[in-house]
Image (tube, rainbow over all chains, first blue to last red; front, side, top):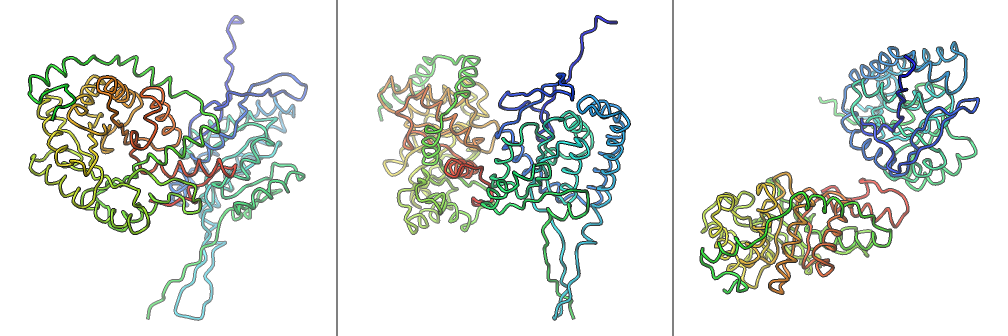
Length: 280
Length: 315
């Protein structure tokens, strides 16, 4: 059947559990390594960021209240869904970046494993990082890590899927909600990952994904008063100073990471200390 | 009472008056309201619109769980919505239940808020299901306690059954109680009136009976102040002005939660009734959450970056 018309996919944003087009109506061209046109994803505007932050803020108390067990289950579910669609992700990575099929398959496998690894951390972080502090009085004195709020993240350009997962998972493990800007050159896996999120019991607004230009969106993320932290792992080192300067105005925590480790989870958590009388 | 010469107070004259009203083109009203909602507002106008909207807000708390402390906090916010920025205007009035009127009035006077009125929801708000004697006493209580504006509800049951004269007499009686001491706002609860025709009829009925303001809703029923309903009411006050040379105010209430909605309302006013209505004495917005969003948008315009709800009060 050669006369069948292609069904092309429209790559849209992922905000509050829905797939809206950018409010601005803008798109940009994604080309593969050889310069062949592949897709027209959305070029997100600052208003899209604003909408995403409103959604993330509204979703945060509910997600924070979910039990560690429940959060772990949902993250594991993400891994399950991703596993089930690995062929699509492998194909997209190969098409856009031009890497070998074996290399793309390794990235998808690593991504699934990474999600499972983060899922395991949800109920371990409080016990491993929290403490029972010795105090000179009839009190128990606990320190417990708690969520920070709404965190924004700039995902690295490559690896486009694994990097995205490292930008999202540690933030939500800690009970935060996230607004992430996906890889500009290879946004296809991010938008397909949004479909994985939509079918994985992740409450609407907990993860929001934008596609667009870093130079446009990052300053708005840094200066936004309602974003509590910013992961700039995907931003070139030269831009770090500017972002940190505009972030100090609102006391935003700004970090960048090189690898996946539990410190990434703790970076966007705040310690709370509680005094509890022992009784006589 | 001469009721602007439109009716003489008898049922026969009221029936004739109500019968003379034209119907509302529902599809046209929906389309016009939707079209006006797409107007883009430029930055300089937006700044003016935000300040104007703030000065038009009837800052409202109508909960069974209201306490004197909450009402006082609301009054403080009404006088100075943003304590860190003195250029923010005070709101139009605070809107509370009857028993809170005295607390609100005393506290407003105490903190330099004499210019902020107190509106009381009266006549067995929100259902309006009480005897006339109770409704009159309810209104008297509120005025004695210092209310300068009375928000009364109409008997929707009587209105929908076509017993217009009952509704008319009720408004006339409450109008008499208000006298010159208080402005009278008549609440239709448009969410229960079913059609735009009814909204237009209720508007003309209330205006002839002596309302100073016509108000969409109690805030307890959804849908409340939808754009087409406000449009129909604004057209009614415009037409009433053409008939009588008297300007009646409009107060949408309920469901207007953010700056965008508020600015859309101002566009509706300007394009329908006209710019004369763009002042707090002729247009009010009944709201509670709206004020915080207006303040956040104002901060964003001043500072150049998005504000956070953490920097405005939790009501």
